Image (tube, rainbow, N blue to C red; front, side):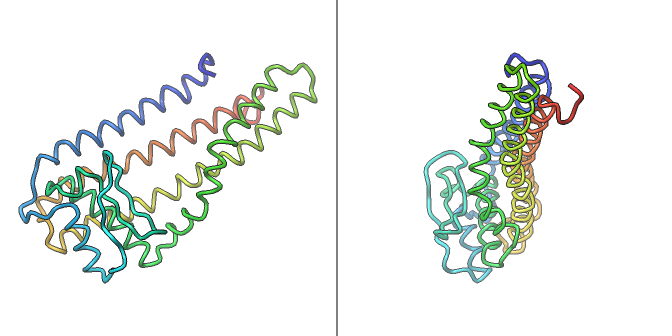
Length: 240
């Protein structure tokens, strides 16, 4: 596939460009606002805990975890894990990331339904990302090597089956978008209302969280282009 001009033009180059730009924006904004301290001095951990307390959520534990921007909220264990550069830092960037994760905990406590749907389809998305992709690839190889109409048809059906499984990845990523956007919107509003940062400091929080949101958009585009490539090469979306 790496030698297929269509794959290079439709999937590989756009995917690398989009994901590269999104990744650069995240790191650039995080590094920039990591050097800007908040006036009220809240650390990431303190900011997250304050939002949880204000929301009446007392069964979520804020913990430190290793890694760079490995922050996440686990609804199963009810742990809000903050990476080392976020947990103990009082920078605008750290507070922004921390309150975003607190936003997920608030979503969970408030019964935000897209979050529950996303969790429910995780097993299907895992299957689609592995078995679905290689099934499509296998069908494409069969079509390229076959010399009979029957083999061509079989390969096409194999690609269709793989595409259905792989589409679960795209569905998961699409549902992830409103989950992430909503968590960020909650965080941007509550972090000011709670007095953690001022209105002027929210500019930095917005830039950090908006850049992070682009990574999820980039993932959707990359997955959609991959799916489109296999459907085109199978002949389902073209005459060839």
